[in-house]
Picture 1 (cartoon, rainbow, N blue to C red):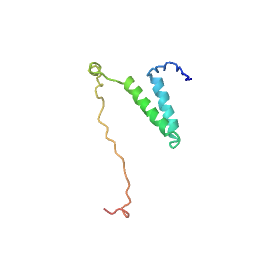
Picture 2: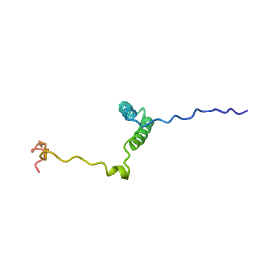
Picture 3: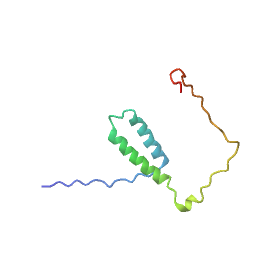
Picture 4: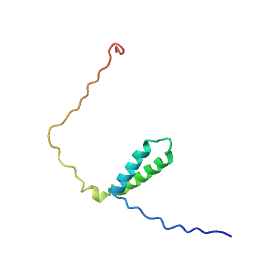
Amino acid sequence: MTTTIIMPEKEKIESTPEYLAQLLKDKKTIATMPSLFQHAERLLDDEISRVRATLFQVTSGVQDSLVLPEVSGAPVQLSEKLFVPSKEYPE
């Protein structure tokens, strides 16, 4: 005698910004315990990639309409002062 299990049809999850935000929040939570949830983190990465591709896909027709705004203001040059101990690194 064989038993047949009928599984309900898989619900299609809509790719919404809220869903993506929840996935990112879940990934951040799981990242605090990396050794426990390695496979879950990989699955979350796959789902995040899928949702991002769905939400932010750019087709050739839409790409022409995406125009960046004109630059305003003077260019900004960032710099950072780095102190190197000259006794330890004379070169």
